[in-house]
Length: 462
Image (cartoon, rainbow, N blue to C red):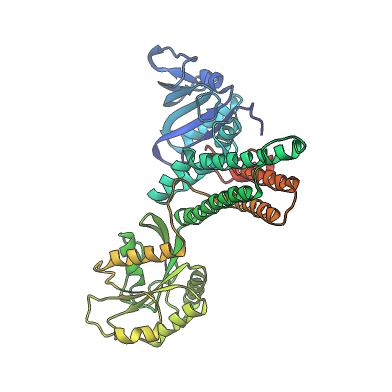
């Protein structure tokens, strides 16, 4: 990748919409825009000004044919997203017109941007660190308002500031140790080993606190997969529709209506929950039903939580027990749901815990919406018990977690070295290595290959 190239991309989803944006960044962005943009009513454009929007037309400079009526945004370096000159062409939101404008920019010397290259340039040009760059992807992929808030706080530099503070503390301790090494024959103040150990333990506590945030971030980023399971015709599809508040799955009094798994994401208390409606596990009568049962079993294997549903207006049957036996065999956490409480009840609740030893039980009516809030609260409680959830001020991803874990290992080895009476040279070596891992987290020491891998997850145009 050459930072001197002028890059261009469509920065909005392809399809029919009110507006679509073609974005250019680089030293040739303004010259290319000059060749293709004609302002309306002979209005003059100040190409030396920044943060100006002009109304006019995109015109092919060779054929003089008008391509689209647009708004042209001009942003001069260095106060831009990439710290380079940026032009954004706000077109009508159609796939054909956007491609026409894009091809025109390409023809005049720009090249197509790589995935995430605009954000990568923002990082390489020092506007943001790598943790902030990665938070841009979290913002784009946020599934709930809470995950969006955390991603925005990370973009604002909350994680970067925390890592910077941690790094400064490590450097202070390393400086004092290296001073003892370099000036061992002179009279300088030496930090007692117990004091060094105390400072290292403080660093360790801070890293552990950050690692706990990764578990929380994972929940807000990915949520959990909750699979609705039960015999045929207990109301699984009705529950899916009730939770989604729309008719997503076909509901019928005929058993076996659902023959495939249906997956949708809902927001419960800020957590994205992938709800999966499944077919019953009753013996298959044909190839289609057999495939549906295979997919149900596969979904149960991947489930973080099983919403095991029974029909309160019907007696417990062999198929109910077979479904629960499958859940137990897979060692999945299950929430027992008694459905159809709006109908006369037949199930003996006192005997249920012996038949289905689940720790949690909720009674609902999926068709009437009774106790759905209780069900959502119970799902949330189960999520919260998985980790010590502390929303905090930032998101931590898997790559950042690994960097922190490696930094932690170095701190532990340093403490162990103090306990064993090893030399200051050894302590300094481990501390320097720990600082290097923090620098990997913020992107100070990462190689081109790793950076390419990170930004390849971005969409083109971001």
